[in-house]
Length: 345
Image (cartoon, rainbow, N blue to C red; front, side):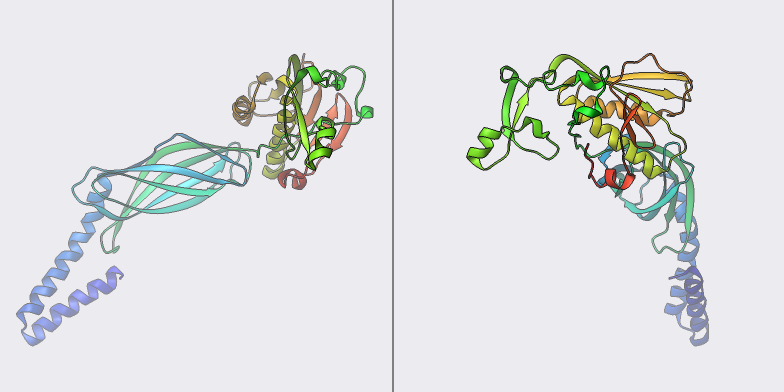
C-alpha cells in the first residue's frame, strides 16, 4: 500500500467521522494520521541501529560452481527490522564494469546471519562491496538509507583437471622438456607407488596393460615422484584479452601445472608484473600451494616484457592460449574448449 493511498484513507476516515458524527471513526482517523507520521520517523530510527558486515573477508569457489557469501546483521535497537534492502556491487579485479545485486533481509534484535550466492562464471578475484543499506517501516510506506563500507574478496579457481603430459617425441627438443622423459618420470617397476583405477586425464603411458587385460578394467601404475625434478613454466602476455580469455588462460595454466606435479616434485612459475616493473618467481609443490600461487597471479598485472628472464623453463604459456616448448609452438587452444574441459595435448 503506497503512502498516498494510506494518507487518502486517513483523510476519508476523518471526513466520514465528521459527516456522521461518529466518535469511533474519528478515533480511527486520528490513529491513522498518527501512524502515518510515526512511520515517517521509524526507518530513521531503525537504520541508526542496523549494520551489516561480511563474516569472512575471503571466500573461494570452483569455476562454474556457486559462490556463497555469508553476512552478519547487527541490530542494536529495541525494535526488529521487518524489511531492509542491501545493495552489493561485484566486479573482477582489474575490471571497471560492476554488477549490482540487491539482497532483501530482515533482522531481529541482536545478531543474525544471512547469505547470498551467485554463479562463479570466470576464474579470478571478485571484489564484493556492500555499499548501501535501505531500511523500510513495517508497512513499507517510507524508507531511509545509509552508506556502508563492508568489503570482501572471492577467489574463483579453475576446475581441478590435470593435463596429461604425453607429447610425441617430435614435440621435444634436445635441451628443454626432454628432461621429462619416461625414465625421468619414474617408468621403472622399482619406483611404482601403487596401482589404481584409471581416471580421466591419466596418461596412456602409465596403463598397466597386463592387469587391465585380466580384469577388463583400466589400471594405472602410479610412480613415486622424482624429488630432484623441477618443472618450470614461463607465463607471457600476448596483449589485451577479454575476461573469458583470461579465465581460460588461468584454467589452462592450472591444468598444465597439475599435470606436471603428477611427476615432478615442484613446479616453478615466472611472469612479468607490469605493476611492480619486474619478474615474479613463484613455486608450488601440490594443488593447495598451486591455488595460493594462483591468487598471487590474480593480483598481478601480467604484462609484456622486452627483456628475457633468467629462468630455466620447460613450457611457455601465453595469454593467447598458445603453449610452447621453448620457442616451438606445441598447440594453440581456444577459450571454448578449455572452459568446457575438452583439452588434450
